[in-house]
Length: 220
Image (cartoon, rainbow, N blue to C red):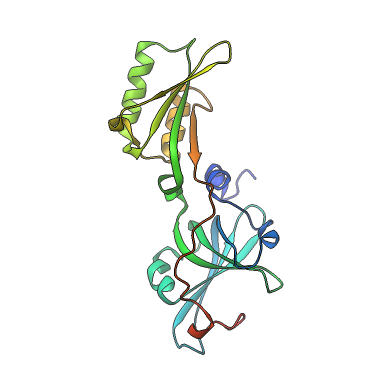
């Protein structure tokens, strides 16, 4: 895996994607999921039925690839993100009726924005044996550098294995990000940072890409 262009994003894929390309075929047809990866190719075209432009995106993760069909208002809304070598997270509906699953996106966002969107709480795990006043000051500095609205909990790990959770004031809320994770782990030790992620299935949005809008399952 070392040297793969997706390597820097592996922590985000492991945390924020609900499935990967190897497991897509196991999902029920028309179920909703979150899947992330790197855009390998973008094929643009015009629907023969509706006369509207669309993009067929090849999304790759570490397991394989999947086609993401972006059309109508989603094409207009997200086409700025649809460029080769962009890392994205797709929230969408899986179509498993063809030989290979396809995804119809409901929403697309940059993969680096996934923590901000889907993190419910951030925990900082601190070992009480090492906690000194200057370390708590360092926590304050770290939080001040990443202000936001996500609740922050301090988890004090005692030598005997007990954990004491301390809820912080609203003004110590943070904006979750890979950068915050890396900085927390660099300051206080590996695995200091823990993100409690929303893993509930996506909610269904308006279905506007139906066959009446020009997709017949395999049109180019």
